[in-house]
Image (cartoon, rainbow, N blue to C red):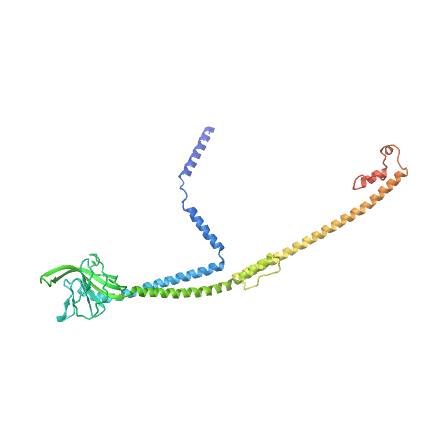
Length: 378
């Protein structure tokens, strides 16, 4: 393969690498923000003491459990209060629904047909009404049946198909005024009746309604929620106090370990962690730390003894060198003195010694002296 082919292949490879890099999807723009948020949370967790984390976690779990219990209890109570009258409503609704004639109240000669647009009380807690399309119902003033007609009636939906189910519709609606709630069952059908003004039969699509007053359902649930909040708050406060005491009591061995470590850092290597049951985590940790501290103390004492031995050896060497220097200085001085005395008495060799003016003994003394050639005596 020629050099041109190799260069061409190299250029193709670089081009493919560039294309591959260009086609790589960019990093999501939210990743740095998520990483910063994660680092911030980790930094908060790292700065928070362990006892605070434990107490906070326990209290959060208790609060979540109490909130779940409160929501479940309120939902169940509201559902029970709302649906407990459904059986009575159905029993009064179905016999008078889809029979093509207006429902009647009472029996025998006192039976009275329900007029469209009005509501009538019954001997029970129920009321019956015929709703005209797009309108609300009102109390019928001419009825002599027992029951009060002073309470606000239910506020029924006014759209035409809200009760178009063939089996009726069960629904909870508010009152036209006031805080009460009503449970209603209603169905829309065609009724044939005699017009009281003309006496001619008429057919009209009406909504037959049977309803019962549930009272102030919202006030009852609000009282239950308030009661749950008060009881739950008291439970959280008691558990917080008990949890703080329990956590502090169980983490006291860690405080002992911290105090022991601070004393050892000050140089008191003989301090040890109080021994506890080794079957517990803190007891096993204390036993391991005590073993480690014993080894550290032994090694530290051994190092001190080694350093002291080295200092003693160095002192002995210095004394030996000083003594040897003193012992060597005295013989050399004696030899120099004898050599000078010999020279002054005329003991100089002929020849080279006369020319140089030095004696053999003087030269030997100069070479043996550690300080170099000795100074001449005057």
